[in-house]
Image 1: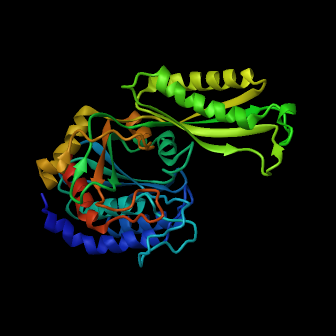
Image 2: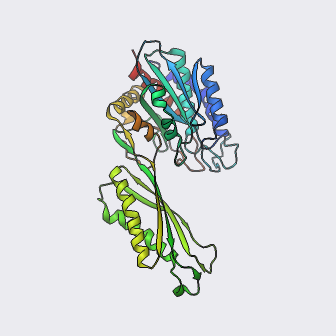
Image 3: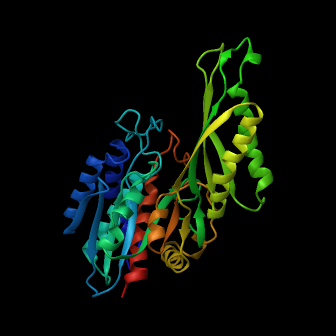
Length: 389
C-alpha cells in the first residue's frame, strides 16, 4: 500500500483542483461547470466508464481492478455549494457573488478525484470502485442523494457497499472520527400558520392577535421537548422562521412560523409529527384562533452499519494510526443526505479533521488544503481494506 508520501505528492495538483472549484461554486442541481470539470478529470485518468447526467448533474464512474472478480463498492463525494457571500479573504475566494463552498464540498470532490487518479493508475485491487459525485446535498426534498438512489444507481452499477466522508472543523488535521449506529440526526421541517383576526395595533382587544399566540406556541413547543420526552433521548425542535405584519401599527390576520426537528430515533419523528400540531392547535384554540399545519420528513437518520464501519475504522487507522481515529465520535444532530444511500446499501460515513477553522456554513469558512492527502489516503486505504488482494 502507498505511503503518506505518495499522497503528499498528489497534493499540489489536487490543491489546484480544489481551489478552482472553490472559486467557481455552483448551487443545487445546476452544476454544469463542476460536473464537466469532474468528468474531464476522470477521463484524463484513463477511466473509460463514466456516466453523467444522473439526477441532472451527478456522475458515476467505474474503475475496474486488475485483481479479478470482486464486489463493487461506492465512494461518494458531494459537489454543490451554498447561497452565502464569502468572507474568507483567501486569494481563491469565490468569484460568484452570493455563492460559496461553505461546507467543504469542493474539498470532498477534489479528494475523491485525487483518489480516482491514484486508483486508476494502479488498479491493484479486485472488483470495482464506483466513484459517486453527487449534486444537491444542501437541497431540501428531493435532494441529490435521494434522487440518485431513486434513479437506481445501486442496482444499475451493482454497488454492494457505499461510503462517505465529510470534513469537520475543530478536529485536528490527520484525525478521523466515526461510530457504529446513528451518527447524524434526521431532519424534518414544519410550517404552522396561526389564523386569528387582525386589526389596529392600538386596539388589540378587538383582534385575535396571532403574534401573541405565536409566541405562546413557540414556548409550548420547547416545553414539548422538555416535558414530553425522556431527557436521555435526542430531540431538537427549533423554530427558525416567523413572518407577521410589516408595519408597527398593524396586528395581522395570520402569522406563519416554521422550524426544524432533529432526532436520532425514528420513533421520535412520529412523536414530533403527532404532537407539534396537537400543542399548536390547543394553544391557538384556547385564544380563539385556528391553525394550518404541514410536516415534511426531509432526511432520515444517518446510520453506520457495523461491519462496514469497522472496515472504515481499519482503513483510517492504517493511514494515521490507532490513536488518531475516534471510534466513538460524539453524535451530531446535523443531517446528511448520504443517509438515503445508507438505507439502500450497508456502508459508513466518516469525519475527517479540518483543523481550527471557521464552522461549516459560515461566510469565513474555507476547506483546509492540508487535509487533502489524508482524504485521498483514506479512500485508497479503504479500497485496499475491502478489495485488496
